[in-house]
Length: 361
Image (cartoon, rainbow, N blue to C red; front, side, top):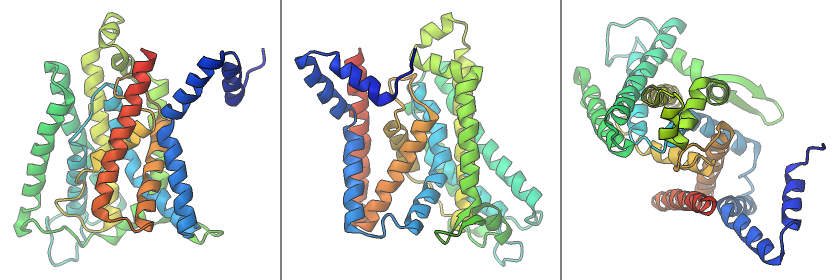
């Protein structure tokens, strides 16, 4: 039997309906994809208004911004699949960035957070990366434990750990008389290893940094975990129907713990990359970053009703969101107004997602 393409299948579905159902079919299709349609229109409008929007350097910039955001979205996506969320993500990101900056300062600098540390060789850089990922994983483990053990809502648990983590950040930035100021003087070896050019696209005359390649590797790894491992199957089973998953022999407690732990490790890695990219970290680094990650996941089809989502959708959501933010800046939209637009995008995406669920139900 010949396998039909997407558009042929949709056409056949449409032709099989009567006139009234065809109208409803078209209306549902427009409403279900309204966010994407509006975003495409907005992108076209921006490209017309600003010729630099789709220039090679602008596209490369959007690619780099998306690569920085991807690890956090990949982590928080699993929490949403479990019908939860993670409000602590941004603060874990900030803590990881602060730790990375402090442990990888230029040893010749006059003002250091930690004075007696190894030189910033490749081995020490990897050790710090693992250290901040473990720190993130521990916070994720705490989140997962309280969600799974006491059946607390992830919103409450992660709100609590968000506040706790922020307190830790504030104390960390006071170490050795730093007084809460930025942590800078980051070693060039660290910046070059993460944010330095991996290769150059000669036709565009732009350099692509190493962290873009790291993001690609993470996407492949997370795709494999979600789609090819028992853990991934258990995650979707728990998200779809926890009671049915228990009856089927799924260890719900362990699955929930692992999802949150993996998410925390992803936030830690994202913060590690951000420290190298920025070159200076403050206590406010990571503030509200979880909002962008959640919005990207929902735009990419990860549903809050649970058990639905895929890595490709998350990647698409991250890219779409970054394109919109860059477009807003290029159009000269007031930065304060951009927060309103971000909130509206999240609200619209969640509303459309819930509408799809209610229609199916």
